Image (cartoon, rainbow, N blue to C red; front, side):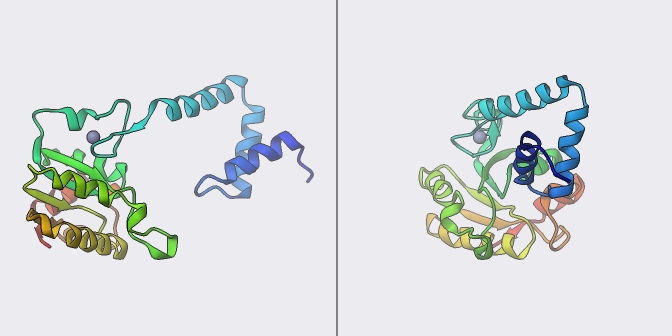
Length: 198
Ligand SMILES: [Zn+2]
């Protein structure tokens, strides 16, 4: 089937999104074409607005509408305790447990040489700078319990060791190879409580 240029253009753009192949991209494009114009307008505006209004917190690198984010500027949060996670979704997962009252640091991924993710691609230097400023007692490494997450936790721990802070890793209560983002809040809460020195 020959597809006209404007449709082809949208299909090509959609295909650049994760998990969207040619067939899904075409289905979405044709769906938008046959739907009322309001859907396309709403979608386009929502995407542009999100890009415009969401920034990275200058402290923890979570996604936020204002920097520093509400978590970093909340005086009731324990500033001497930092929980290190891979992605904003993992932060949300730890936050859902309601058992963590410290602050966070979002690395922006995990070490994965195959995917070109080296230490320079993660916000490790930024974390070290936060620790170097002082006032931090403990850093909890809550990267995912995967090979990449474990390697990242050990790498970060080795980098931070000279700062003399307590370094802990969330416990194995988490299913091996699992993702913090998809684990239930009881499991995540337990793995936080049973954390051990790394
Ligand atoms: Zn923040």
